[in-house]
Length: 305
Image (tube, rainbow, N blue to C red; front, side, top):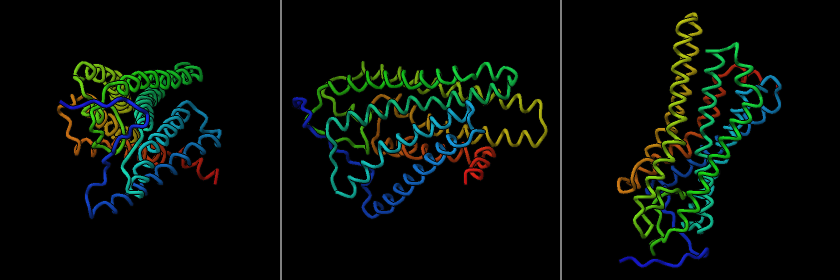
């Protein structure tokens, strides 16, 4: 039987990380550092543009700046730790550091549900344009954002506090590049199958619901556009919707596959690749998908410059 060790905040976990490929490590390291810098710059620029340009002071762009902020913190939760561990050849993370990782990650992942509100915003704007000022008023917009942050952080707090009071075995090796609930489950010295049902339930509510909302919103947008407009308008709507859908599917497909599987079916090597998609690639793509293909943002860029 595995011995359990008293919980002390001095205890450390060992993160095996992404870099286990010998020769490939340097290339991978450079790629991730570049992605991190580009994602950070893209999101910072977008937030500033939306703040500075009065034409962008609309519900849609308010939600977009929130999304950029989330993506910025999201990618900053994982990458800097990977980079410092790689450069210092260390692999440790403190008990408390691991707890903070887990909490931030769950909070931000849940708040990414703002993608759902953004699709609802486009749905109202295109399918019910006359009701838009009422349905997407400043109050409603603010309450959407507050609701997303509050529910997400409460959910994250409950899971984090629960997981970190469980008895961990003497093995402290996490085969992952950051701390998150599924990667911690194999280290727990008791049966976690009951708890994993609550993870599954939270996952379905916090991940599946927004994803379904996104799919439904864009489906209706495409139907409406298809019925009413000229070929040119159709192509533009289809290209915009499809790019939004691809990014949302990347994020939700990846997180759902990780958070809704029992840990007996988790394979660390695959999980790490999947995690790269939702923790690194999505925050990189979001600012570009939502802004570069967007005349208003490009116009604002020119005005500000």
